[in-house]
Amino acid sequence: MKHIIKKLGIALFAMALLWSCGKDDGPTTPPPPDPQDQNTAPVMAAQEFSAKEDITPADAIGTVAATDADNDALTFSIKANDNALFSISSAGALTLAASKALDFETKTQHSITVSVSDGTETTDATITIKVEDVDEVVPTENTAPEISDQEFTVLVGEEIPDAITIGTVEATDADGDELTFTILNDADGLFEINPTTGEISLKSLKAADFVSKVQHNITVEVSDGKDKASASVTIKVEQNSAPEIMDQEFTVAEDINDTEVIGTVEATDADGNGLTFALVTDLDNLFEVDATTGNLSLIAGKTLDFEKKTQHSITVSVTDGMDTVPATITINVTDKEENLSNDPNAFITTWKTDADNEEIVIGTNNSYDYNYTIYWGDGTSEQITTSDPISHIYASAGTHTVSIVGVFPAIRYINGVTTSSKLMSIEQWGTIAWRTMQNAFAYCINMVYNATDTPDLSQVTSMSYMFLRAEAFNGAIGDWDTSNVTDMTGLFRRAIAFNQDIGNWDTSNVTSMSSVFLDANSFNQNIGNWNIGSVITMTGMFDNSGMSVPSFNATIVAWNAFVEQNGGPSGITIGVDGVPSCPGTAAARSNLINMWNWTFQGNVQYHPNCN
Image (cartoon, rainbow, N blue to C red):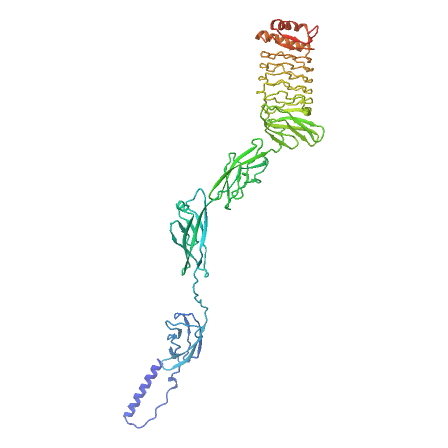
């Protein structure tokens, strides 16, 4: 406004001056101008800005500064540009001109002249723009990927899966670019490739076509997005060699725990393929096998028991991923000696050795089959399946408890077995199912009887010579079940200590009572209750026995009554040598002799009374 007022004042002054001249008043002197009416030019100093070489026209370089003492409005403009690079707004905002760019490598500094005007006066100044370098990514030339011809061999087994993995095609790229794989040529249309990994696989349901040839050729292309390369891939088909595994056997103690390895199942593969093991059958559900190592062990919480089963058979398979082969694995269980003194199933005896490294022999009967475990009482045991006599040597002298469990049908001693004298006692019969007692404890001269149970004689027909010369034996055996016994020949012959009540034995099937008590000089019992209905012979039965007058009298009188009631037996010869008799026996003897054709053989000692 100020400069407008000034201009208006000047104009009025000029009109007045003209008017004065028009009156022709003569020459006059004009008044001096008012200092307050004079304009002050704007002030602008040289200035410097910095700008990165990668700025755009939209980015501000800076604002040019200027002042005006009159506070006039200022307007900026570029008076001298540098290659038309720059643009300035009327307010002094400096930028790049449209479509222009800086380049540090071309020029590091630019100078331009900027004018500023207050509408009356104009002032110029040099403006310097320094260009800052920016690291630039210099585009390099792309390197094509590299791929070479490759070959894969595929082993096929008897069973071919629908999809087979062939292998992975290898390719490289010097620039580190991501690669993409494709199949360019596959004449048979059998294969596919993973575009990212390069893994070649057989298409589904193409297995039969695949194995119809021994070799296939395809072309694989690889691309880095700019350049491509291709190579021939040969795929050979070879028949797989199945893994080999043999039937195997391991032996392990029954007390093995479930963390221990029973054994390692062994298998081989001619192709060098990795093998995987698996348990196929395990009827007892006891075992497990490590798929990788083949280590065989018990399932957690499972145990073995020799007394229940001495051998287990399982089936283990091994596969190489194509073919699977089974094998039978046998686990033999060895016994860990246990304390069988309280086992009701065990036949228990004691034996005495008088010197270190002394042997005992337990006689058997080879007419029968055996399958038993014997615990020798010194920490050792054996599983026996033969009928041969069994022997054992004790390292130290002493008394040894021997326990037998299982199938042990007979024990037998015959003349000439010298260790029978080492048998000291029968402690328990257990649940052994005896088949015969013939010569069972013959010549066991030191054996005593401590058993409180009874033997299972349900299959026994012969007790002949069972206690022959068992000179210390005097067992309470009156409760035995002898109902199936047919032969008692020599049963207690020379068992010089025996004198137990056996009057209630069931002898209904016994045919031979020959020599039952021959030389059993302590035996003095009434056996008149014996059923003699099947007896054929009694020769030597009481010869030199310990029968007293009352016992013998009661026995003969009772048998005479039995014969009369049952019509026999007749024609019996009975040995009574050295046995005392009395008048009370005479009538019964006479009836048996005269009516039933009995013969009383031997030198009978007659007593005048029967007491």
